[in-house]
Image (cartoon, rainbow, N blue to C red; front, side, top):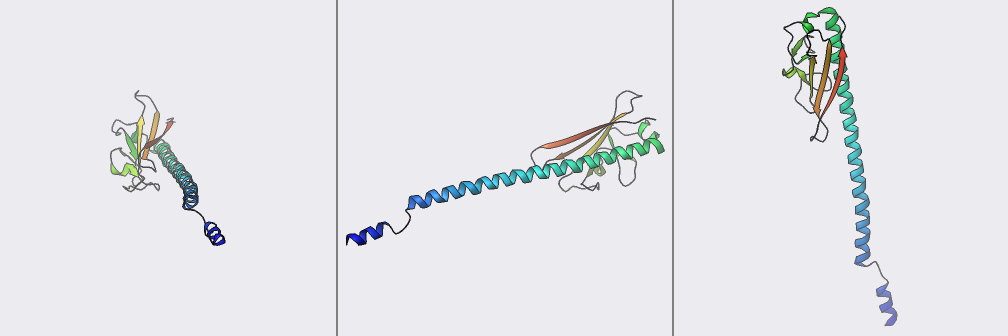
Length: 155
C-alpha cells in the first residue's frame, strides 16, 4: 500500500507547475508580439516618409520646370497661395484642391495614407524661396507627420 501511495505522488506535474509554465510561455509570446508590432510600425513609418520625400521632390522638380518654361505661373500675381502642382495639368492649383491630396503614386486619392502637398512662396515680393510641405497621418493613425523641403528658384 505504501508503494502505491508513493507512485501516485510522483505521477505528474502539479497544477502550480503547469500554471508557472503557462505564465512563462505567455510572457515570452507577449514580448515577441510587442517587439514585432513595433518593428512593423517603424518599417511602415519609414516607407511612408520615403514616399512623402519622393512626392515632395517631384513637386520641386515640377517647380524647377515651370520656372524655366512658364515663370509667370509661379511668380505671377494670379498664382494661388498656397498651391501644389497638378500631376494631370502640370499647372499650379490651390492647395485645398482634391488633386493636392495624393497617394504614394501621386494620384488624387482618399485612401490612407493620403499625402497633402502644399507649396508656399516667401512673403517678400522678390523672394524666390519656395517651401514644399507634405503632411500625412502616420501608420498608427494617431500622429500627423510632415516633411518640408525649401527650394530657391533662380530666374
